Length: 175
Image 1 (spheres, rainbow, N blue to C red):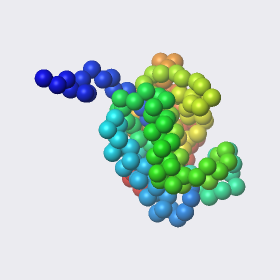
Image 2: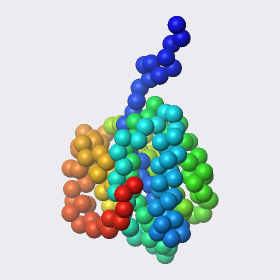
Image 3: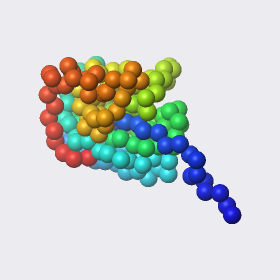
């Protein structure tokens, strides 16, 4: 009898933020959906929820086109650094070309949350260091993971309540 390759593999709960601001609104939406298709096709990733898509102003470097932003909640057998490698590979497949920090991009995929895990290296910080400052990341994350707890033990919706009171995002589509 051959052992099942999936037996005893731990699945992790993660939330990924997606953004695009290159091209027309339809091209941006297409990039978000293409990224989701690539995520769903990966054998160690299962998408369990998709947020709405929101039109949002740029953050950080503001002299650039508006973004479309969304989030997906996934179950994955990948560890954080493996997941980072996969999302960077998907960004390249969808057409991302490195520019400059917070610059325009065809697609951006960020690991916002990963279990109740806290991780901080030069390449990756989880929870995402700006999650609770950016409505365009936080609102879609809340939409797909209203029950998720941060490493501190706080529910995401509790930690983000003040931000969400003032956030005004323009919902434009379903992911």
